[in-house]
Amino acid sequence: MAGVLLVTFFTQGFNQAADSIAQGSGILMKIYVPPQVFAFAGAVSNAVNFCFGLIALAFISLITGDGISMFFPATILVIIFMLMYVTGLGLLVSIAYVRYDDTRSIFAILISFMMYLSPIFYPKEILSDRMLLIVNANPLTSFLDVFRYVFSNTGVATWADWAYMSGFSVVILFVGIRSFAKAWPRTVVMM
Image 1: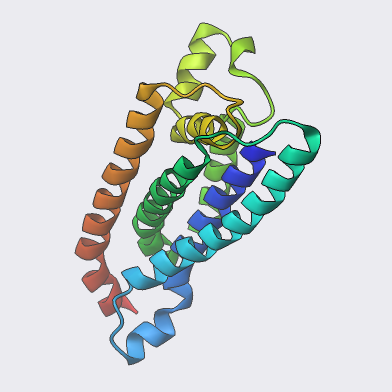
Image 2: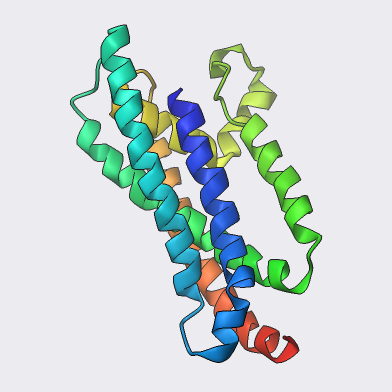
């Protein structure tokens, strides 16, 4: 259930962050609002939903006897890095969403593919070495490992998982902001 909750945060946050700029284009044409605010607001709203889901997950964990880890406060770090990751990806893709309507369908397939390459419903131990390498390259895997570890100590999170999660989030956010800033002026002219 922890994996489903986190991947739902990622999927809905990404979709809302990327689509919010395309949906807000009417407002952006009338008054000046930094368009990045729309992407960040979409990601934050899904972070709030995730926090409500955490309450339900904690309740279920206590009922089933799994308990909550003493590292639970570190869940805030997972939320912050997921916000960075989702916002960066949303900014990267939002220009394509504004210019081409079909990109929503393409990215929906890619996001589904990423989800299936995440160990949500299967343990990583059953994978072959080659498949394990592919699954571990998926950034969602490190998010899942860290989240499961800090929430209920049911997963194993190494320092490499922490480094991959945080580093990848920072890089994607930086690349998303830079590429959006570069492409947005040309996109506004086309609208």
